[in-house]
Length: 340
Image (cartoon, rainbow, N blue to C red; front, side, top):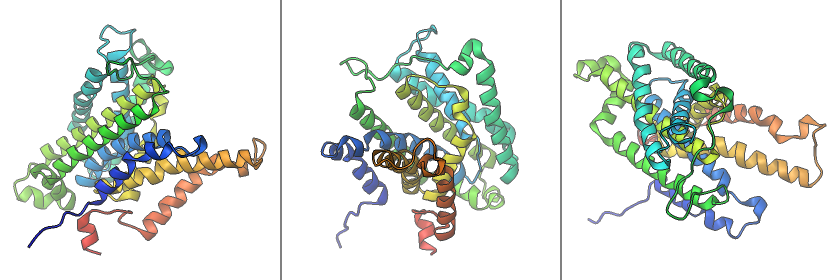
């Protein structure tokens, strides 16, 4: 009996994404998607981190944006010319991972005994604290000004600029693929099975000898490391950390929406959820606004005819429809599909 290889949804999604720049070569400038899809990649990496702690370990984290901010400011401090380090892109982006993991340990240590709503409130508070610290510690973080300019990657041909759109696209694509592979391996490992066990029944997990506190701590640290990594990438492509309020509660909610809409605990679901939620904002609404402006529809005087003013209404409707019609997400994990 011969076994046939069948490409899974993750492979199909990533394979399609790899050819988007080639498609842009034949599309008019107004229809090109590479820059918008690059933002989808960034939020997919962030949501993959949240999926580890919420989807795998079952711990509701509403402060994932705080770790993204920690990664962005870590990258800024390690690379900007106003600081003594000036490590360059690759060493700094690599160091965001252990520093983010350390921040995850710091948050995880006092919260291991909390579950459900209590844990959500603590992580929400942590996100607000990080914002205030970054804003008021202006001696180090430059307060609301942000840290800039920040370096882009350099592969021997000079530092990249915003015009090197396709280079940025494939860099983010490759880093997303590596993140997916790393999380996929964790999912199939003994650690991943322990996360799933805790999510399903913590008491039973303890009775089977699983060290629940230690496994939860690793989940927090892993999610924080991935989120900090995403923050470093965001700061680099923008050449600035931006102000601390850029990493507010809305970022955490958007990441959570991506996980819920795509399918909690599903890597492929997170990729689809990122495309739906981020693509809706950066592709559909942007293109719709441009089309309406080109045809003389709407304007600054009519708020009802501006698609951007309907953004949160559309987000809310998308969530309601997703939870109502697809309660397990658009692409739930295989175990969920098997129970349907």
